[in-house]
Picture 1 (cartoon, helix red, strand yellow):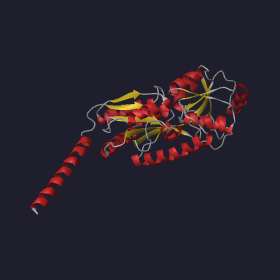
Picture 2: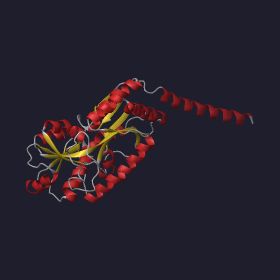
Picture 3: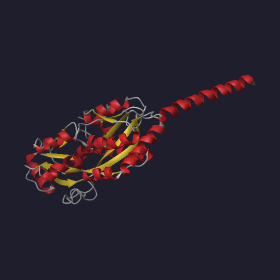
Picture 4: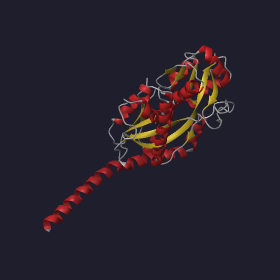
Length: 324
């Protein structure tokens, strides 16, 4: 009986010690800088929003958020690096909806989108835009589609598997039946620069990355992929208004932690993001860049990511899109 009691006490002590270590890890977090791996080049949505939210989180959590750009392979290089990081809350992935696309598009990505990550917080979203260089004669989408039949231009994307890429594929090749080749860049910044220089003269991008160039006249936006027009570009029609029904796509930006990260850390980071999104100045900065703040719980983000993986998986299969 005494032996049994001693054994029970020993097991209980071990369990308490284990709980204490796990709880202590979460309670002490963060006690050093947190690295945000952004799997795209500087200047794109994930980079811009990662830096914006990182500034607010640094103040809230008392530690610096360090952005680490790892572009390449449509986001897969940086994402695979994040998947292999220690699940201690000191490395997070800040990425776009390309994460959901690549779950189907990339068969050798180096990670499992649903098993290797914990969807932690969705920050913001915005529609994609069909853009052209100021040198292109088309003033609206119908004129672009007509001109492209003979001109056969390529179209720039922020990377294979990004939602701007698939929005354009769906529009130009599946619906309009045009012979237009996608030209993939390592992020939205380089893609926008290429379209401004008309190399190629057509592109698709999340609104924010092209906004200042549209406003300055260097680029022309012909349509947006949202259900309604956006306030930042009130004169630009939706794809439905431009005569293309059935496309409603968004680029979203979210934070993921490696699988195995303690739930207390996941919750604390999620809470900090939601506090940042309630901040008036943060919301104003998002609004100036045509972003809609989102927020919510990790569970809500998890369910949304699953629905996005299903949606984009269908598009990839039906359009027979192949990884680059």
